[in-house]
Length: 238
Image: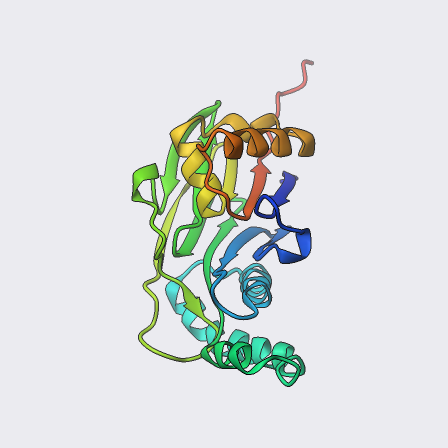
């Protein structure tokens, strides 16, 4: 199975790419993908989002038990990664860093046997498309259901654990999986979930810019991973 994988990302309008706080990771063999949305109000959110997607893809995290087992290791890695940057922070930023970073996570694992599994914490969304029609959207399928206070994974062990959702299904040859961060997912559900199937980088930017300009797409970092599964093989004529 050789999928076609494309990734797209843009920061908030008016912001530079180094202010982008989403993250994504993919693996073609085994076929895995993840996106994470770092919470802007937390410190070092991008580093935490990157840690989450790297870990989820490397270890195929698509079940709650696997996430629970991996989380302490990821939290320790994040703490080491930001430790050298803490002394240079002003006191108020250092205090925020002590509270940790927060991010939503969506992880997908696609197996060669025609099955797939996904895990989500928060409101990053998986869109499963077949023949240019939406098969399912998960964990949210209603654009009105997105909120400004989704469940988030914390980089420090504070407070109750975030609720973890999991699902699974089957895929057909030629199916497409789209993994999108919240603002983009909500906009796609309001408009056309199959729209990104043929997008280039230029198409992505043009559609995002236009939707932000007309107010239908909330001004937030946007990230999209597109996994196109190969079509069924046509037997050779003899």
